[in-house]
Length: 160
Ligand code: COA
Image (cartoon, rainbow, N blue to C red):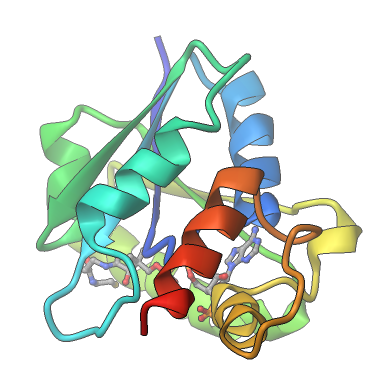
């Protein structure tokens, strides 16, 4: 039984995140998507909304579930008896940040391996903040995020 955690802020979850998740679900017996609660970051969606938006996209992924977590990622991974942390690498520009984070996490918890998964290259320029910027200005984001996320973005910005 090999379990992994796929952590992120997911504000919001994109098609690129979904692509990484689908690949991870083929490699591991169980994948737990872990939505980070970071009180220092101003997120558009609450942790509960982010969890619900991801959960609605798990059709065909019976070995995946979604929870939120607060505090140190490696501590959470240890509590969950997880063997690995999955991170997506979209482009070379992601590498430096991810490399530092992976080495720091290894230092904190040598037993937990970070595994990088490359999403399809068509997602290499998709990011949560760009998607939010486009949606805020009334642009169409349906190509970049699942349908429920596009609707939630439209609704949220309509009332802001
Ligand atoms: N497709 C599309 N976008 C992707 C992506 C993919 N496959 N992979 C990453 N991204 C983008 C996101 O859209 C987001 O873009 P943005 O910055 O423009 O909004 C960005 O990359 C990163 O977001 P996300 O994937 O949600 O993860 P994150 O980098 O915010 O997650 C944590 C960071 C939560 C894993 C990290 O902060 C953490 O571990 N926190 C817990 C505290 C801790 O342990 N700290 C010590 C770490 S050493």
